Length: 285
Image 1: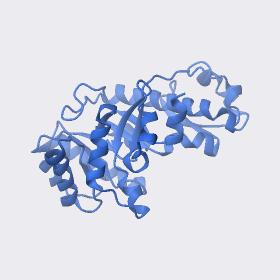
Image 2: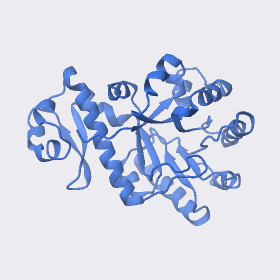
Image 3: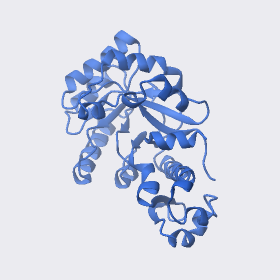
């Protein structure tokens, strides 16, 4: 199959805080991980993330994480900035700060003055694309004009219109992997049309897509004609391969160099990170 390791993925402290959960996904050579606090998930479950505990986790797994996000506070840019500064000053961690949807762009300057050239854009999950797209474009245009060295990660965004349009260094989404085994549909990158389109595992369409499935991805359509528990590992790997192919197309399109402040000589963007603990476990086998 056309799948290259390591696979870009994201892990959240909230779900991977225990060593027995984290250790397996740090198996060398399989996943290129970035770390997030999972604060939004924690908040919705009434279990706020403690900054000191999250910082300890970041340091514990520093050798296995390409970069980590600072602990953000949605709707409170001052507290978000303080958390980022605490990570840097008290814990010695260069964490990626976050600017939330609708936030004052003066914070880009505040972080840039501190040498930051990599910021996450958050608070976007659940908002309609009609609201997300104009704001994201506004941020990128402002950065182009005032902070041309700034790169961005889009938290929870894999909307094709947005990723195709703006030169983000990276993005992530929990919705990339699950469609194949939850809804019997793969959003497959078509290398010939250079676009992502749905392939329904209805017992018919996969055979009509033989040129792409077998010819490009190396997958026999008969193996994924329908979705069932027995072919879940194949579906996960095919979804990952499709995500990689789309990301490679974005990399050729945008050619975003890696932010030096956190990443140094890491690969060119746009990177697309999967967020699915069940899928990550299958990719380790």
